[in-house]
Length: 247
Image (cartoon, rainbow, N blue to C red; front, side, top):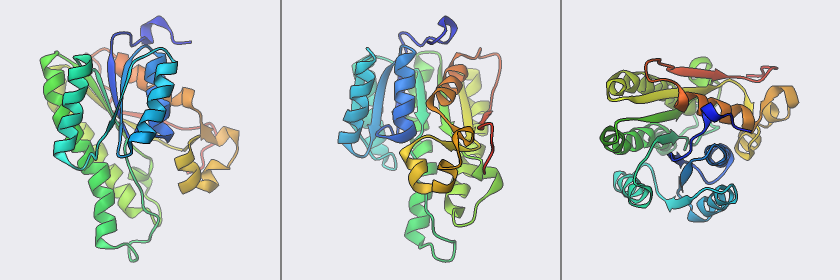
């Protein structure tokens, strides 16, 4: 049950990487709080599946296929969202990929693909949504972080580097956009989340037990708090971790 102070009635959220995992959880969390949701990912069928879950919660959903590494597709996504809903209140830059190869075994193309999706995609989506938020006098941009940006991890150097870049980008944007009433924040997940993506990429963490994994309610609460925070306060980083830390 969402408390009145955390309701998002009348708001519109965009979730990138919304076709599964944390993207689906976030889309449903925003919908449960009262927001309509734009669900975007490269595969339209996965976006449609998430959109159906949003609609089942009584909210409107717009599924859009878009490659966030291509500026034209990102701008088309933003234009479609505004044409459909008239506004964009929340952008959740969730889309991301990883690589499990060592640095020596990583190809040039593989490294750049991780950086392009995670960093360039965050930049392009942020750049495209800011004019809309400025015109409506405010909004919230939430970027997906990771404890690996601070701790690093063997065979995950590209992913860790991309998340470190996002952390720095977030802090700069928070200072740059704060005067326009646009709150930019960065959620650091210090532990496993109950999603298929974590299960596939970090099985040892996923199977570490119920006290070592974050459930959707934990994540949803963080997003609601970041959006509802007064603009006179600044949360650059929210660190979420399960009771039993495993990273």
